[in-house]
Length: 292
Image (tube, rainbow, N blue to C red):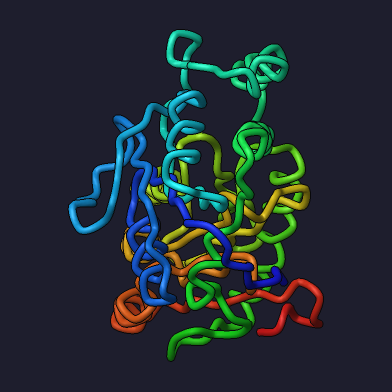
């Protein structure tokens, strides 16, 4: 389980990538009395930030980030949302605090997995004098809890698939490849790579349509935090699109790691899952039966 909470000193900044998570974090921060400054990533963030103080910044612009931190009195930064494209050399703008880290930075950008890259980015941000905090520190209500989250519960067959997919996701995470796996009838049929969860589920739907997967077996999606992951960035996340794509893939449900995964728009997710007859569950890997 992650520890939730942070000490408020200076201003909070939110580095916003794609998706809805940055908006949820920003609104949660405002409800908590913060006045968050939004740094929307160029060519990644498509949200409307007109209701917040904001600026657009390039993915590799550490010099620009440092200037914003100083001018706005920012001492805490949240990284939220997806980033589809890693910056190339021409997009990296450095300052003195970044120069000494540049050789290792370039090696990581070229060859590192997502977890390695995120740890590198956290180090670069903190070299500018700010502390990186997790999205769950600002919006703890997004964290998945243990057990079935909606009205549908996993069957015995589903629990066996959950255990199988959880084993695969744990190994996949150790390799810094992805966070998700799909098991159908005890067989691992898909592992998440750089394409992301929704694309993986579309691939499963295609396999089922082609007859490569038995229509009589449903299966499950499991998403886990990588064992070595810095939980301040890129926690496993599900939303309405995850439910929609799981349904298209013919799955029985979705299981995520309780306390170390985020559920975006929980009420809408559970309503959609209940209407489709899919379960959504939080797993406690330390409990017998994972708390199901």
